[in-house]
Image (cartoon, rainbow, N blue to C red; front, side, top):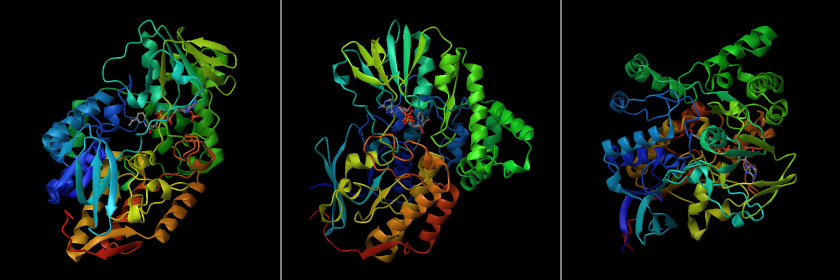
Length: 540
Ligand code: N01
C-alpha cells in the first residue's frame, strides 16, 4: 500500500517550500514533498556557476514576503543578492519552519498518475517509493530543464562540459585553462567576467548580442534594512499592486517630452541602475517600436563606449527590441572584452560546425579549448512539467496534450488533469512578476481551492477546454499588442529547437492575481467543472 497524503508537492525551491509551509502549517493538510536535488533551493541549488546573482530588483524584494519575523531576522547584505546568499536564506527558511522532515530529497518523480475512481494522484519515485494524495502540486520551476545544443561531435570533446544550470557542487578551477563559453543570456553575462578573472583564455561564442543594464550592486546599509523592515506591510502591498516590485512606474508619455528631456531621463535611470531604465522610462517602451528603438540605441551607445575594440563592439551590438528578451543586469560584462585573455566569436558570421576531442571548429577555423561552458539556457516554463509528464484522465500523458500548445487555465490548472495545480505554469506571469511573491499568491489560491472543495463536498476540480482556449487567446492577444512576439526568446519558446511557438507568460502580473482571486471569490465556477467527492477507500 502506498503512503497517503492530502497533498504531494514536487519541488523544494521558492515555490515548493512555501507551498509546503502554508498547506501543512496554515491549512492543516498532510503533505509530502519530493525533490530530485540533494537539498532545498530549486533553481539556486543547481545554478551555482560563478557570478550567479538575482537578475531582478533584488534585496529584500526577491524573497518571501509573508512573514514579518523572517523579514526582520534575515540580514540581506547586498542590493543584488549572490546565488550562495539566496541558498543560505532558503536553508534558513527550511530550518525555521521545520520543512525538511517532510521533503524527500534526491528523489525524482518517475510517474504521476490520476485515478478517476479514487480521485487521487499516485506518484512513484526513483527511490522506489509510491505515494498518493488528493492534490498534486507541481512547483517544478520555470527554468529547470537544461537546453543542451546538439552540435556534431560535442560528445567527442574530451574536456569537462559544464552547463550553468547544472553546475558542479565542487569548485571548478579555470586556472591555466582555455575555456569556451556558448551563450550570452543572463547566465553567460554573469559568469563570463568571473571565468575571465582566472582562465588562461576565454572564447565567447555568441549567437545573439544582448542588451544589459548595470546592476550597480552595492552593500545594503543598516538604515535601508531598518527602513524596509519598518514599512514592510506597505511595501508588500505595493509589490502586490505594482507587478511584483514596490517601485512607482513613470506614467508620462514619451511624446510629451523633448528628445533632450528623454535622453536626460534615460541617463538618470541608467545611473540608478538595475531594471529602472526598462520599468520606469516610458510605459510604451515595450509597445511602441520608436520609443523602444530610442532606448535600444541609448544602450548600444553605452556598449560602444565600454568596448575599446571597434570590431568587437560591432559584434556585441544587439539589434532586437530591448526588453523583449529577459533583461540582464551586469557587473562588468562588456568591459571584460577589453581584457587580453577574452575573445568573441560571432556565430552569425562564423557558425560552429562541429566539436573535436580538443576544440570547436567554426567556419573560420579551430579553437582549441580545455573546458566547455554551456550557458545555453533552459526548456523554460513547460519543460519541467513535461519531464514529469503526468497522466491524467484515461491515463492521457501531458506530453500528448501539450504536443503543439501548452494549454492551461490561469497558468495553474489543466483540463483532463483534475486536482493538479502548477505554481508558475505556462500562462501565469512567472518571471514577469516577482517569483517568490507570485508563488505565495499561487499557493494562497490553491489553498482556497482545496478549502472550497472540502466545504462543498467536492472531490475533484479541473478547467474546461473552452476556458483553456479562451485563456490562450487572451495571453496571445496581450503579447501580440507588444513587441515581445517579434523576438526569438525563451518567452516565446524560440530558444529550443522544435518547441512550439507560444508566448508563455501572462503580461499583467497584478491584474492577473486580482483576476484569479475574483474567480476564487465567486466559488471556482468560471471556467471550471467539478465532481462530488466519492467515498472510496484511498488504498484501493
Ligand atoms: O539562458 P538564456 P540563461 N548555439 O536562454 C544561447 C534566468 N536567470 O541561462 O539568444 C549557440 O537567456 C542563446 O542565444 P539566443 C533569467 O530569467 C535567472 O542565460 O537564443 N547559442 C542565449 O545567448 C534568464 O533569462 C537568474 O540566440 C545558443 C543563451 O544561449 C533565464 O534564467 C540568473 C544555443 C541562453 O540564454 C535564462 O538565462 C541567471 C546554441 N545552440 C539566469 N542555444 C536569477 O537571478 C542557446 N544559445 C534567478
